[in-house]
Amino acid sequence: MDKCSALGNGGLGFYMGVGSLVTNSVARVNGSFGFAAMGPSAGYRSNVFTANNGAGLNVSGGTNLGANLCGNALCP
Image (cartoon, rainbow, N blue to C red; front, side, top):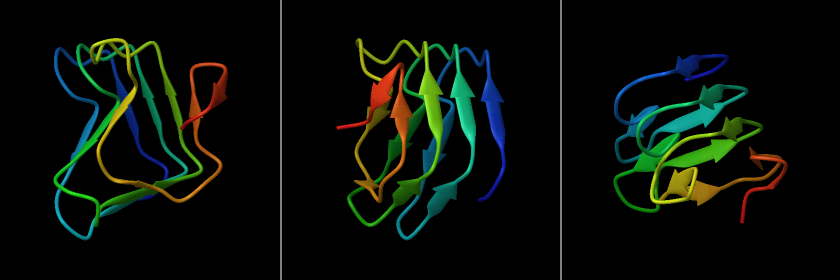
């Protein structure tokens, strides 16, 4: 999935299955995580996740492949 937006959803921004990849995308102001994955084999790279309400976090699960922003800082 490349160059997609998930904005203002009541739940998750992106919920990815095994082997998925999200790149160059934006998830903002979603009711839960901006990105959530089923296990570590889903990855994300070069995205912006801001103001999502996932228990104080923007991302849950998956593998950070670099250059992702969570709020105003690089994602852990």
